[in-house]
Length: 359
Picture 1 (cartoon, helix red, strand yellow):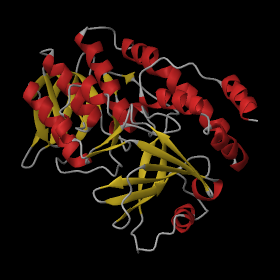
Picture 2 (cartoon, helix red, strand yellow):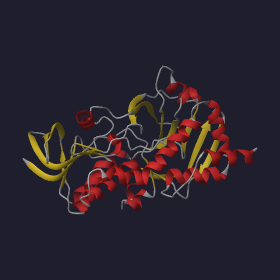
Picture 3 (cartoon, one colour):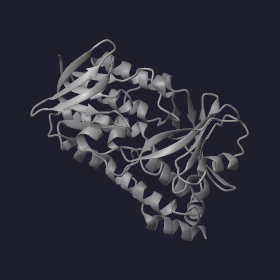
Picture 4 (cartoon, helix red, strand yellow):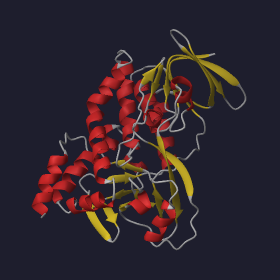
């Protein structure tokens, strides 16, 4: 039997980050990852300030995005984000790098699959399948960083992660320099479709899925000529977040810590992991984790949740949003809200004042 203070299940940005910070504080921990070569379908965009905040090597960055484009029907608005650019990383390489950083700090790293969990009064017992054997790991706490399809959440909380089943495709032609966000009921419903630069090509997709052929409509609207294979995957949605239950902490996708409206998950997985690690390092009460997270992130999450409901509810409101984005004031405020940790106070009255000025 292996014994440790903390068992982390899942080696993506959330799991690797919490393990690293625990190790830096000399808190014994074991990290298990089902497959080291797993690549999550992801555009790989991350706020550039994350590299300083989490002490990451910028050499892992493939390129930078200095503009984003908002598109609705024939209208396009380019927004300069060069002050706070998006860094583009290749997810397999990025996740491997994060796990290596955790291991260097002192984390015990294993490739293995969790097959059973038992919650006792003062510890957790986890049966883990390794290549040639099954071993039991005993820990004081378990951290569920096992993603959008979290089996731990289903076992512990009896529910599944709230998620959108999206469609995406990788195009080899016409590589972009900017990240494009496309809106419209016919291509994205109450969400958005995207076209992001990736590895010399373009990753496209839509968050909307249902009876309408959203993906085909989107591909037609951007005039895709190549025969691209359309795939599907889930993106968590911040609806029923969970932080702690029965000696198990949840972090990242398993906790639904994905920013509404933009659906940015990498930064918030890492930030949430750092908050959780510090809670454990401080030996605070488990519920303190949620309280600390709320103090840092809840206002922003709720604000963007409200704005999504208002501006993406139908094509009329999308047109209003596009009109508002012609204002440099709106652009600056929204980019600060999305891409920085600045305290941004924004509500409907702000947009009404801007709208009146525009007309």
